[in-house]
Image 1 (cartoon, rainbow, N blue to C red):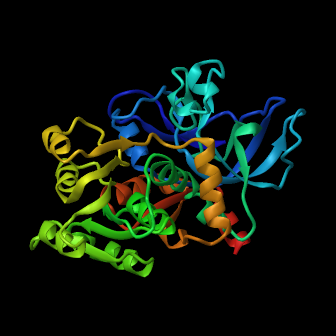
Image 2: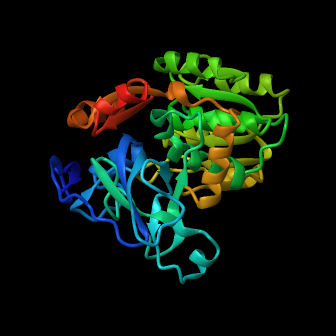
Length: 350
């Protein structure tokens, strides 16, 4: 089968190449990939800014259809539409696994970085980590379930958004758009910040229900946040860009006793004004990908149509055009770029 492989550490490491087609074990399902999204983590991984174990088939934001089920599998059958948890290989014995915090397991291997992922025609995963895709959710939309689950981890499990809270979302990309929607589903009043070249992304945010959008590179954005919040500042700030300047603005725009939550992976050390956080008694939190509970929340939000993520799948390309997809992601062209190893499936799904 064809797959996109990180062949080694260092530069010039990505190859679209032949790989053995995987064979499921007794407890596994073999999945025909429908679409796999390009994540900022994939860019970090390509540049060795995120750990991986090459040679490895990359990609972790995917939707697919079960093509084969192992002998012991009873919950899935060929033809079932699925999405999957990313932390598919853990020790199952450490304290973190016992608590259900699989991402914190020291032995964890995730699809696309520690074990083979979704930029391929097929992938094999343990059936116990897959989720049935609810009816009414398109397969291309389903490829965004993984970033949505990560956001649900941030907003619903690692923070506390209450109805009427002013919520600052720093950034205007996919993770920021998803964060804004989940915060709004929790009753938050969202103020999104970005740069002057984010006008198109701001327009999307407004269509999806964001209360206000602010450019941080013109005018007096901090004064505007204070005006909007009655001089108090935001109760919560979700940093979704990974930039040092963005982290600084979040701290400045938070009210005293507010919550700062790091969503994006900066990919490198950034300065952080701990004195300001201390003087304002800011609670600092973050989230690392998602856990099973995060996925259950995400799928429920989608099933009940409490959020709309379909418009964020802005580009769908064949897997053969991965370089163009990566380019669009790096220059922040549009929103989520999806790669399809079987592009003919898109017509069949319409």
